[in-house]
Length: 221
Length: 178
Image (cartoon, rainbow over all chains, first blue to last red; front, side, top):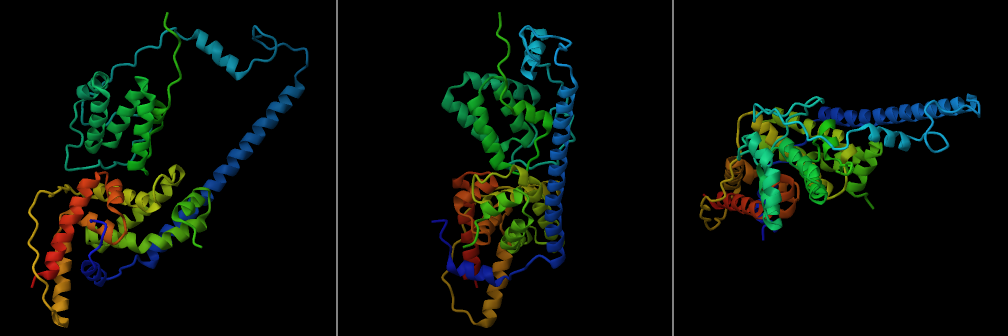
């Protein structure tokens, strides 16, 4: 019903005029679009050149190395140490249990959490008539526990409802918490919904890392 | 055959500036009028219009054609408008529970009456609550369906349909009034 237009209203609406952006505005936007792609090309070329130089340097280094020279820290198995082996060695040195994440120091619940990245431009919530940043930090922290306890259906309804009012950074924090709890399926779905809702939102790097699928930690004894 | 918007945006994402020019030419006028009628002041509309396109340019790397490009574009526009209103201390209140104005029977109109009717229509459009006006503009100016309006504004289909219905009823009443 609502998709059908009223011809009378459409006609009147068209009579209001067909304003257009100025030519100056067009030039500014198209110029910015072009500059953005030329920057893209410049960065790509630079990155390709850097990779090439790096590869050549490695080849030269390998060729200069005498064939019988053993590596400084020879691995248990013969052959050169690979990045994967280095990673294993690092993991051996790491504590057996992943430490609990440090408690958050959100003294001011309304203030955004500090990040190492410059704060992105403020983004609107889905509905600004609803309270924007009023959720206390404790409530946020407890949400994951509540969600674990709630039945599946109830949980998805609650999540959907909370998305209507929560600000983008709160939404992302909730997805990050899902990752921590190993709820990867739900986290993926929520992240897809977030990207659909805020297509132009620049996720700070620190948060982006939290949103990535967590590698399984070392097994507990 | 013309390339679809989504294809053009992907081409722009890959570095084809010409694809953006085509895309811009397709959407500039409608998006401009959508913004202009939402904020009313030309200077503000021009500023917002430019900022919305800047965001499109900036977000190109993250673009994925999950929905129609138009929905994606107007989602960005909606977010930016809400941001603008929030900065100005305005809130969007959905007045979906209010009573519909009674529609009168249309009267035959001569040229002068038509001008008056147009003025009444413009005033009625201006007087709509922001969310209802936005729903109407997204539908009428930008050609979005109810589902797409819901997606672009972060609401559900029922709310979008309701806002559109109220807006249409008020505008219809303004047309028939007098």
